[in-house]
Length: 338
Image (tube, rainbow, N blue to C red):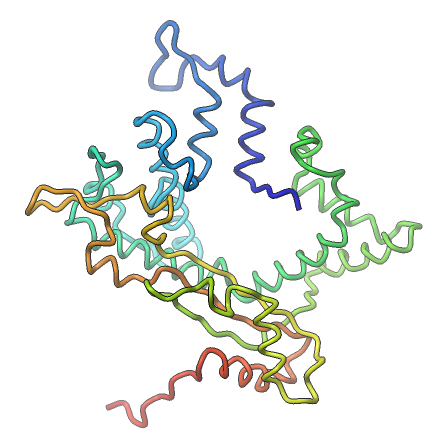
């Protein structure tokens, strides 16, 4: 509604609410600033903001190089959460070789660069991160919770927050998961019929009762040259219309929800984030773009998990048939193990 994301709001908090405090920081556990040196909150916000087409070249070189550790193919953040979440979820105790990835990473005159010998470790990291998105972050029940919360927030937003967060920073910083859950848990006792009805729905959600059950799932991968934005999967409304058209006549008006979460394996060559990482070829001593290597080009650009959620499982077969008319049927197993 306000064209904001957590990076934009976080930047405003850093500049306005924390700016003076940050300028007063003089040391960290390992070193101390020299006289006349101080932190610039604007440079901190520069680091946390994803570059855009128009801002990718802004700022001094050292700051742009530092940003590539926070924004790009492999960052200090996603290397941390992939290892941690792979271990905690039981996916893998050693999901990828972080030591090799760090050993062969360096800064060159082009920017954050990986040595050719580390390319296989990078490919493994991207593969594991994609698997975690498919199996954990985009798990069918996680997304069912998301769908339920989405509906609840649309109806509850005006009762939870007064407006644009940038105009209400103090209230925004006090809006936490805890304050929200305590707040909505009382609504079912309200004398206001609308708020009471909302409270009943929140009470059911807090008791783990979800409206939506997954009826069908298909995963669609997009390789270089495939125009994802031109596909029906980039528009939930268009996809829903196609599915309704493919359903049997008696199910044309059935209630269901479409969920199409997207994961970017690697940014396209022209995206600002694609200009954060480079490759060093030891044979020639030259630095290239990563997408010039066949090993890297074979990695899909992105994928979408296309799911249909219904209120019960009675029509799962019909939903699957309707989806298969769009994505193509799933492959049939061989007749024997040979």
